Amino acid sequence: MRILTVVGTRPNFVKAAALLEEMGRHPEIESVLVHSGQHYDYEMSKTFFEDLEIPTPHVNLGVGSGGAVSQTAEIMRRLEGVIEETQPDVVVALGDVNSSLATALAAAQMRRTLAHVEAGLRSFDRTMPEEVNRVAIDALADVLFVTEPSGVENLLREGKPEEAIHMVGNVMIDALRRFLPRARECALPVLLPMSKNIREQREAYGVVTLHRPSTVDHRPTFRRIWAALQDVARELPLIFPVHPRTKVRIEDSGLRETSCSDTNRLHLAPPMSYLAFLRLQSEAELIITDSGGVQEESSALGVPCLTVRENTERPITLTEGTNRLVGLDGNRLLDEARKVLRGEGKVGRIPKLWDGHAATRIVERLLNRIPDVHDLVPLGSSNERANIARPQYRLM
Image (tube, rainbow, N blue to C red):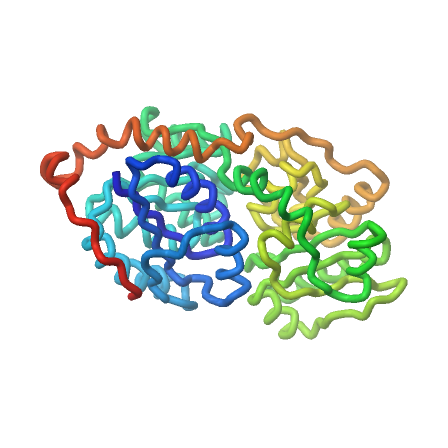
């Protein structure tokens, strides 16, 4: 079975790491890895391949940055030739980024069996680009791999057949469990003088990640959140690895990095490698984020998480995990952070099937079920498909 997997962003890389490792255990699988180039700078891409031991992609589409529509269209255009050349039995779309939407559209148009990993998640907020992507990918997918019960409910409500839906767990947590021991051994980046204390004296700290348009693009909202972060930092030092688009918003909003002092300890840092950030999360007292993946990772790590959003597509992190929604109100963020500091943070549990074996279940289902789905794809007999020559991959 030839399986083509497309990655393009940091969340994709984490999901792909566990899946590709599991595929490598099966000699009956030929794995083809394509990098769209959606995240193309070193910290946002290459270090993740190194940390997560992801093999070098067979093809790098080199798309780079751009608007959502033009980027998606360009990935589709470049991916068409790769699918035509490789003739995969299955195309895998991971998560909800533009690369994943482009993958789903190209696979559907070229009548390849499409599997969606992390299917069924819904925020019910169509102003989020990721929500539009999720709904579209699931509508096109033949096989849907789900991380939590809400995903099954959403897909059934949208009319997907029950036999196409598979509750398998969370491949993000597969990667976390596999790499956490290594992460705890790695040195944290030297951020400011305080970072030395974190490593050697175990000073308490919190972690911040913000990057979504709803959080950072509206200047008055971002200023309110920033003011709340400053207040929290007076009571707990905060380390803020800054996403490239957030860095621009900080500069545009007239905000700037503050110095390390007794009263103001919000420390900005460059984007981190996967292992460094995983260690940072695992040892934090508090995580403040607008990231879906960080909500899941904090719940798996047992670290209280405050999500700066009005909704979440991952409700299990609220009902079973350590996550609380605080909206875009800086006062609510400050109040909930103080509860955590008083020892009143959310105490959750790790959801069912977040056990480090989601990738195993996905690959087993692909091997056992895909031949039935493939009856829909007009490629001739199974023998004809098996005789397709392995292509010579190339950089696009």
